[in-house]
Length: 145
Image 1 (tube, rainbow, N blue to C red):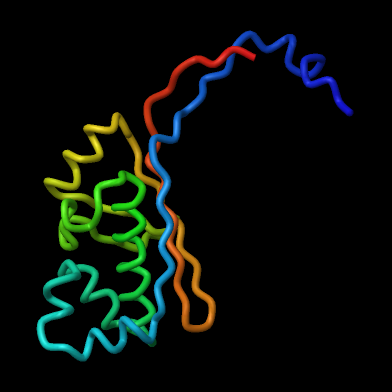
Image 2 (image 1 turned 90 degrees about the vertical axis):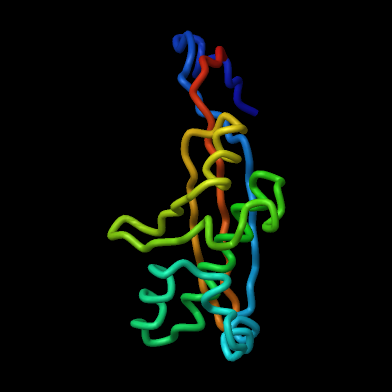
């Protein structure tokens, strides 16, 4: 057993960031592939940038599923539900440093109402599944040990 205090007694405080929300969503790629065959689904659910990106990839359904999972995880992180957020008000873009979530009102306003300053997203694919996790990070505050 370690005495944690002996390792931290010389540290008066740490700047800590609060997690104000966590959401996770698991999505079947085959389910999204089926939905994509329905007229209007793609335009109703995905932002134009998401559609362009996914259609230029080898397996478009996988990328559409990742975007869908990120939207759902975002709505869960705030506890709002996707209806309040609006599917096209949250979109996923891939950057050299990883995926990034972008927001338009009312989704942006909902995040601001939680005190969150950052939205983090992580994605993973395995077989027919895609998982997304979203963290809403709040402002910093001092935490004494």
